[in-house]
Image 1 (cartoon, chains in turn green, purple):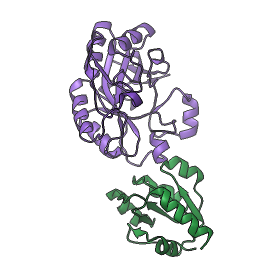
Image 2: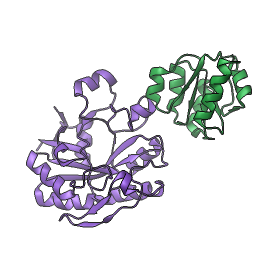
Image 3: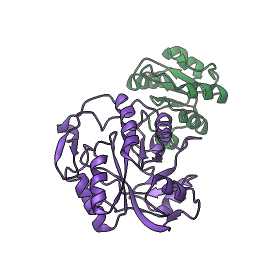
Image 4: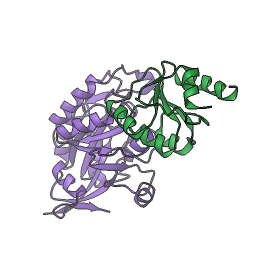
Length: 112
Length: 243
């Protein structure tokens, strides 16, 4: 499933100018410890988190993640948005909790 | 004249809810004197209210105290601030208090005892000192820097509440003075694991009296001051860390 389709089906909103819609989503990873995501995130994963520090962008790039979703209506830091646009990392947002969004993403990917 | 000072730059007092109530400013200073720690950094969680008492006790016992604080950022990263005098520590504390929500629950988190230099209880801090501020790491570092303090990322080797644990790696351009490692790792292992671009210091993060000085950093400096320690970290004018 492409990132574009996931964004539409889950009603995520773009917090950066561009969404790499053609990226293939391979699964998801949920967590707020960046060291953990660096160890356990997989290429093509959607990363569900509440961390808004700009280091999330480097983690997304290193791990070749499909995109980042900030939960609970959290807004990224100014520097994070600026840098995300520059480095072509997709940052999305939702009002839902990490638990709920993880559940919905899981169901969508298991049974599209 | 340059001489070697033994420093433990990260010691809690009974003000930290998670610290032993026996960690009074006087007890800490006496213990440091007994075991040969010359410089103590007093770093309670999000508060410096016991630093003046520690300074006064230290003057009586021939130990140097650097008043400071262990600030919790919005990302839940612990940052150590150290100063020469209580005033800038108090200023930082005011900023921290303005951005620290919540009230302490003594039964859950522990007592937050404010004491004087004679082991007398002055009162109990009611704020949620164990909590996180709403300040970003960058804002905390900037605040410490503007007050002339030393900024150290605490226990980077720990999985929780550490800069590397929470944020994966040391953010670019973050003007830190040093990275601290906990007693849980050796200096050589930390160098291998993190290939740090900043100087490494090791301290005890003592929450109990017997933990004080279990890890130390030796500084070859002229006196126990922030300026001298900064020079040692930057290896300037013959000042340096000695292991």
